[in-house]
Image 1 (cartoon, helix red, strand yellow):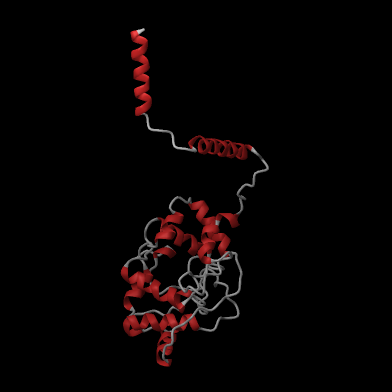
Image 2 (cartoon, rainbow, N blue to C red):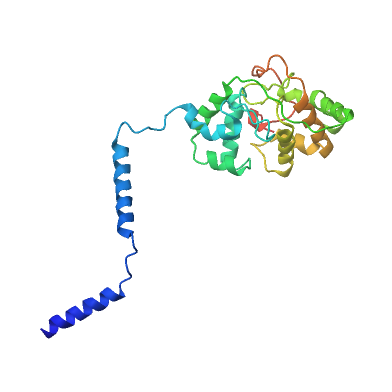
Length: 260
């Protein structure tokens, strides 16, 4: 009897020491269990809506910034058009982000675990899109600045060993298949920031990096001039990239398989 009393006293003390159960805890636990059971049931229910396995769904993260069809975000000035650009160029950019050659946190995160086949699929999707161009804001610049930009774009500056943009990007600056992008219709902010990125080494590609060479030969005023002219230049009637082999770049470019 004494042992029984000692056990009862011990149980009473433990009961007093145990933290009290919060009011309503059992109701919360019941709801959690009910929700978990519903989730398991939903997973097994074929009628539950599933994420569609389509290319449009797979490029949804791209579309958030670049537009559903890769038309870009003209109002922002920083998210370029992807639609119609050569697939080889687009795939190369994804690879450069993945390998850390191009620096931009959201893009690096997005492509971190993508396979080469997946990146090629994304590139080909946007390359096939044909949507109208939209203009982006261009800062006010002088006529002399625009003239300088036109000269750099179409003729270059031989005295400073600056090739014309058109010597690589095509006579109409619409790009060349399969690896050279078009420049017309791109936002001023994007163009100027990318030229600056090559100078600061936050954008690069496989060596020899011909664009890094060009960007480092441009002055700050040259970057503003050529960016303003390209962003405001009248769009040509045919915006398709020129055929492969239709230009001979004046510099060695690793992305074109042309080693130094």
